[in-house]
Image 1 (cartoon, protein in one colour):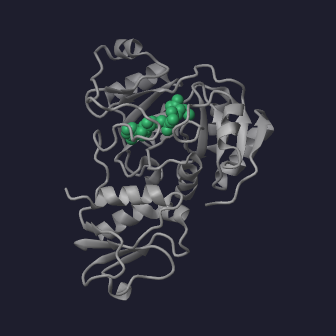
Image 2 (cartoon, protein in one colour):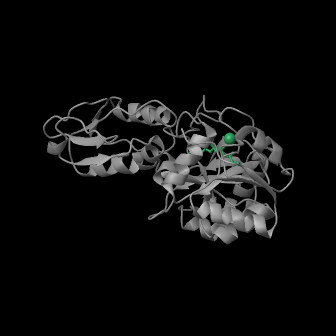
Image 3 (cartoon, protein in one colour):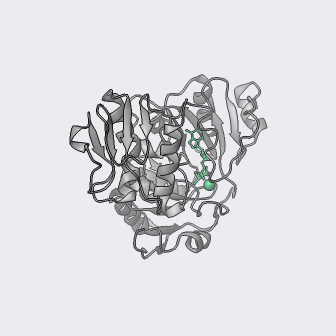
Length: 329
Ligand code: TXA
Ligand code: MG
């Protein structure tokens, strides 16, 4: 666990936005208002900052995050728009609409922020403070609602402080958020599908599209901690290689996903080895998890031996993800 931070609350103005940009650039966490609810922002391209964000939220698993951008042009660097997506963005952005789209080639959003999915959620918020922050930062900002996991979404700076005080660097106070409910989420991965009702009504979206929205399969609901439709809508990244968890030795031919300073027996003979964190830091381990899994898988071993990761802090989410990746398919 990390030491408590001093959380500053600052009225939104040019100075606090510059401070927010400095914090984001150095991998810190900044809560800021959008038109829907307050978001907890981190540099979308910095996996370490994203890992800190999950830790601050207290999420027991890596629920994928929304990448906030200034406009559709910025979004095109992250995601591929089909005709429906382009029409929805053209009609409702900036505004309380999130689009789940296939990742663009070279999408700079950290693998951890999309929880290893091949899709990415993008939205352009309609709020002066959020827009100024995005313009000054110049890169996408991932931001879940700025509440602790399982709590309700915050519509005022004081809600954020009550939930996340001591866990984040700065709260930019822009007053109460006008919409008050989260964005509507639409997946455009084929027939457009409503994943989460929100600030823009279904009817308005259907009018813009000129057709009805597809219904998500039963049982998918937006619980703050439940990966909304991930796993079902888009393939979660699953390694081709088998995973052998809690390994204390490496068998011949296996690759090794290590954790901590003391390596498993036989590590020197591993087909390929990568360490999630040589210092045994779970935040660093989370930041490396998906990219290391992909790299070891690409190296071609049939089995990846995974050393035990402690269940503390983000370790719980790491172990959850490893268990899913190890489950027989
Ligand atoms: O209004 C909002 O959308 C606010 C403000 C801050 O922008 N943000 C927000 O984020 O509500 P969050 O993390 O609390 O909810 C995002 C939802 C989650 O349920 C997540 O599972 C889903 O979006 N999501 C993100 N990426 C996804 C993806 N690639 N596929 C499916 N669902 C995704
Ligand atoms: Mg939320």
